[in-house]
Length: 248
Image (cartoon, rainbow, N blue to C red):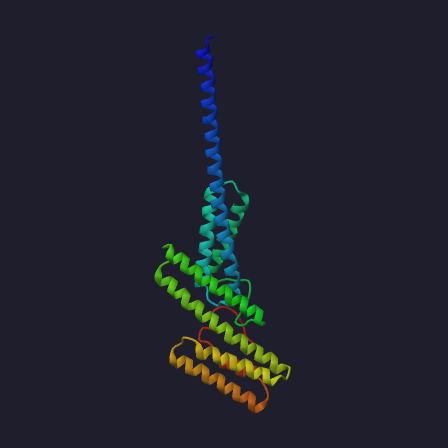
């Protein structure tokens, strides 16, 4: 066998080896890219799941909850399309689809709580509600959510944050009243009133809520008692029959 033939064979083997290595590398790159995208979709779903968990506790309405649940299902469906045999994704997708139908039917396993018992719980919830607002903006900017819907949800979240803050102060006022700590009870009522004063509300609604809280404060000053029924009347909302609620 001539030297030229041998050189040709060796060259062909080298080229073939390079081609095989290139194909293998490309496949590895494609697999890594696909796995990264799958992880991204699963992370998106997990993030929104944590948000729906909070809303199920504090939001008596189902519109936003259902919208967020649809995003969860969409993210998991995208992950499933990239990994058809992943049983974990399949199972999770099935569960989240069932939950979506439950929310469409306005079903939930828990009662809605319109206040938070501690300052830390309130702060954490307010932070998470702000994150949900940012998430809504992100999906609007992507074109996955209409401007009208995003504005409606942002307004709803703003009201939810306001009501949670006011109701949490009133709950604390009641707790202080039960312990005969009237000074602290008055402080919490005043804080609730200040929250209303600084809120962006229709003027008639703002004036009415400020008056109610002022009347409540005067009753506490006069009687040295914090009456549960008076607090209920003070912050009674027109939509308080939507969903099940725990009142203080």
